[in-house]
Length: 333
Ligand SMILES: C[S@@+](CC[C@H](N)C(=O)[O-])C[C@H]1O[C@@H](n2cnc3c(N)ncnc32)[C@H](O)[C@@H]1O
Image (cartoon, rainbow, N blue to C red; front, side, top):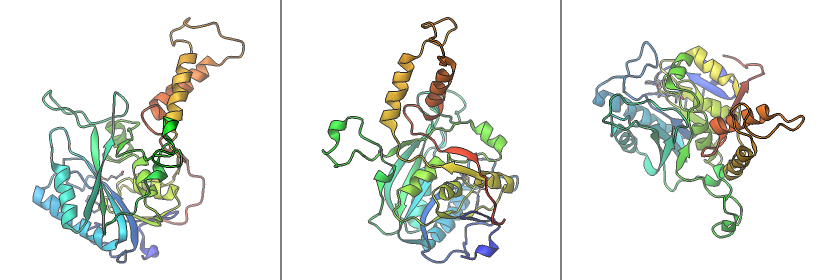
């Protein structure tokens, strides 16, 4: 990979601002993981110069060219996490996209479901009218170059809620978290648009994907968008390469300048129990409700912690990565 020619370089991340139909900067079999979300071809507004409404043939043949390049640069045993969703009124697109990837040579190993919103938590784009249910999930296809896949699902595992299960299936108190990933958006699409991009995925999605590939040292996102995959790679200390044909440089730069902390193990059952207990201990929200405050009690503080846990990290979802401004020198851009 020619590092000097990168259009944007930050930490271990390199971006090339041209189409990923050819990736001359990458050698054959030089990448361990691909994580990406291709354009939706649904009229999204990624960039003033890009039309996200092409004919189905033109759209799929673009993806075919990019997926063939991904196949070329992925190492033997490498893994490709392909995120794509249908919309409420546009069903079946995801299937045609994954079939295109299979046509490019990939073996379809497993389908994960990424749930964006559930029971009022998280955001999604609502369909107009009353004839369709809104789409609150997307697919993450796990594709491999050469089966069998090498995945370490326990790396993003969770402890057993019922400890009597420890030893029944595995000796340690850790089980895989299942094929449904609940990663709610913390803000609406409208807010994302205002931030500069219409279709970013939450950083936790690539974070989880990269983590379960043993020995992942180099990650590729051929449709880098805001740079979410590269932000996850940076947080994990992994080298990342992104391609983006219609870059919003400042959006990407801001994203990469934000340091993300990686949640160690997802302590979901413990978190749920703690939030439930805190909820029963706290007096009701209404003014005057609940017991008299003991001296020094900070109910307001406790209540705001509880609210934060419920809305951002609460039951039903793992703690999202936290973000803080990056305080360090940029090596170059
Ligand atoms: C769904 S978005 C990816 C969003 C990204 N996952 C994120 O979280 O920010 C798809 C991106 O692909 C870009 N794109 C479209 N055609 C491209 C091409 N031929 N080569 C590289 N990027 C392209 C679009 O500009 C858009 O930013």
